[in-house]
Image (cartoon, rainbow over all chains, first blue to last red; front, side, top):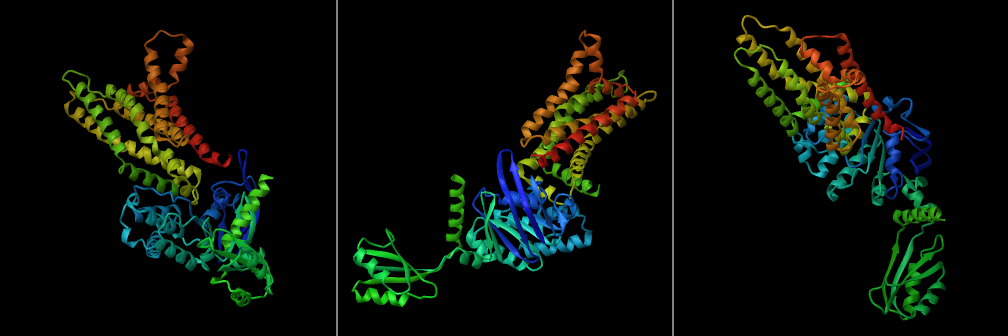
Length: 319
Length: 239
């Protein structure tokens, strides 16, 4: 559905996007993830034909973004970052204008406007002036506009920025519902968003793709195995020595400053593949007579992964 | 073309939501009314030549107010991005903006037709409509050119103030400066140069002369500025 080949964008002296290639199959939701200034928005602007690439190319829905820009734009709904809208217009008036721009026939336009107003929970404000709406409602007006012509591809640049938690949940649900019928590319720098909504994540940093895959694959790819956190009271060196001897433990790390008071300590243990070390660890600590305060399995998060890959990228750039 | 008219309609409607358009319109109509009042005396010629000349002077300050936001506001608010990512061509946007603004200008001009009626009633024995028709044609052509210059200036900046000042400066240079210079003793070269400007060409219209050269000048130069504006819009692709 979306095919990107060696896409590069240079602004003056700055390399914003550096030879990126990826593919989005039909009906998938792909999250474009990266720190601020990583090149997410630039890539999306190129896909929507707003900016041309410096080199490389892409096809959206089988149409080339450079040579068939009009067909690409006909089949695409775009929610730009910061949701620019004509503030003096009323919600329905604006959607009607957008529908006319897309040459939708009157009856269909009316039907689709009613549908998107319903779908984006805009009915209470349909006759209000956009300038008087809250950020959350404006975001939904932008989303309604992107959905208006029932496009095959939806490109959403930070769709949940500035929304309150309830609205974020609703918007994510809406986006999830759209998958299947629409191919969705959304950008975000919020990790849980990708874990909550996307089938696949593409992590971009410094204009390059540093990793891609489903959230599970990404976690697996870097061997971000679960850690067991143990909090107990006891002499540091002895605790460490005892824990290393437990069968199945591959690495022990004493975390400073994590424990509640100076007398207790927290150890982070990594297990060898296939071992559940929790019971053995608990027994060892009790046998030594050290009071055990907490023992807990910590799942690896994408966050850890993200910090790791973007940090690697930053280090590579610096060197 | 349908997309251009859609954009023109939106532009025209948005004028009626903005206080600045009402201010511009009121200033223009009030100033026209005073000029007419002044000229409308027993024994005077039943014509509107003086009023037409004044209208062009007024347009030098009123058109920048109407045109400043046309594209500058789109750049500033970012709406240009949603506009250009719809299946719309640059020419649609430029023609739409121009038409919307031009129609608003015609609406602003329309009430002055009332004066023609008043003159027709009081003129004795009969009134000569020729110079009035050509005068209106002249004002409309000048309005079109001024708006296209304003649209061009508005495409160059994100700031409406900068757009307005730049437009006013250009209009001043092609209209008021030549008028001022026409009273001076100048070399033949300068006279030829100044005769190419809006002021001289426009004055002929208000005197009842429709010169095809003048007609072509206004239409072509309007087209040139619209073309340049299209290029500015496209230029985001060259960066």
